[in-house]
Amino acid sequence: MQIPDSFILVIFGGSGDLTERKLIPAMHSLYTDHLLPGKFAILGLGRKEFTDEIYRQQMVIENTAIEPQDETAQSFSRHLFYQQLDMSRGEDYENLGKRLKALDEEMQLDGNYLYYLATPPGFFTTVTAQLQEHNLHSEDNSWRRIIIEKPFGHDLKSALALNKHLTDIFAEDQVYRIDHYLGKETVQNILALRFANGIFEPLWNRNFIHHIEITAAENIGVEDRGGYYDNSGAMRDMVQNHLLQIAATVAMEPPSLFEPKPVRDEKAKVLQAIRPIAAHDVPGQVIRGQYIASKIRGETVVSYRDEAKVAPDSQTETFVALKFFIDNWRWGDVPFYIRTGKRLPTRVTEVVAHFKKTPHHLFKSGKNENSSENCLIMRIQPDEGILLKFGMKVPGAGFQIKNVDMDFHYSDLIDDELPEAYERLLLDSLNGDNTLFARADSVELAWAFIDPIIQAWADDPGIKLYGYPAGTWGPRFAPTFRRDAGRLALSL
Ligand code: BG6
Image 1 (cartoon, helix red, strand yellow):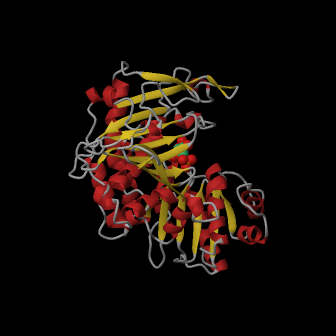
Image 2: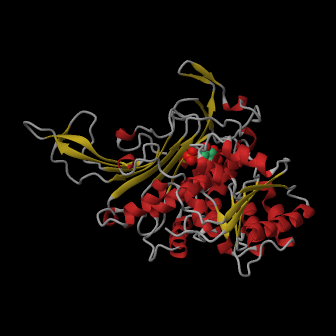
């Protein structure tokens, strides 16, 4: 495993929730796994007034996401530093430049900086313009990279403007647009399953696959993110990024090399080939829903509109299901279904490839069995693994067929929990590998696909927003989530 050069990770939004819950714990795990160099620093930036000591205490020693609190936690915490910074104040960037130089000297670092924008999106352009203004962006003998959190734009127009702004300041290969789903082991494993095995790829096309389903169900509601979510909705929050990126990973052609350019080229080609959904097809191909109050295991759950910071007459979708096609030789006429929602009965993300039926039925199947239809299920989370369903003869007289499972669980492969997506993505960006980050063109193509759908909803109030009781599988009109039902019960 490659160990990165010495570096300073500079976190804008350094006292925020993402830093505390994800970034610092991920850096701590990399540290305990000996994947960081001997010399590095993490500099948190924020409006709050902290000393380095208080920052270390809050972010590491008292951080419940960091376990165990032993000598490693103590020694890791000594790599953390803090500086107060108002993101729009020029002077504060001058001080930032001085602090970075001082840390470089004090710790004998080589002047490599990874900036992490863990801030609300409204600050992305302010911060990057200030970095340029204070010459903290350009590379000479050392590197400068920048990680941008989602949401990357609000629509195609704003994404184009943001990409233009960023690439006027940084080279494309300095920009890391994070999509944490791409850092999940199981999403990476889709590539391994497809391209490290000889048996799946020959079947991975329109001749053998009937349809593909991608599901990301969450049982949580919008929690304390109502303000953000109400301006976003499931389509922008999950489909534009995570789920279309998964679809591209499932559908892409084999790259010639496992390197950033060939891999990202192939994914972009898929996004380019998605057939646009015209406004008049939206009601037939896309279903949107919003959760309403209900009781889950005896507890009352409020409706989406009663969540904090959500408009009482909100039209924002908390559920979306859509059907689309990828117009190329491999996938011509194979429907892809994406479904995602909040306040569904359980948390599960998975990709299911449904294979075509056998052309002729020789045997009888048991009740509720659909033996001639094979499925390959890639479980992204939880209970990460791969499941292949196929029909077998029931022992005994006759030729009764039953569906059985060939089931692999990641937990059989390693004792530990799977590494967190942020660990992988931070390490890759420190090593200058952006294979698992979204490139500008992919982000724009994904917006170009979903923008007209959102526009159709805005233009035509007649397109229904279905209510669904919290804790159920979405609007009753949505395709069934029951995986054993074989074909989708309802064609969108
Ligand atoms: C985030 C979305 O990007 O992904 C959230 O903004 C969502 O709304 C989350 O809950 C899901 O991530 P995970 O890793 O828990 O599946």
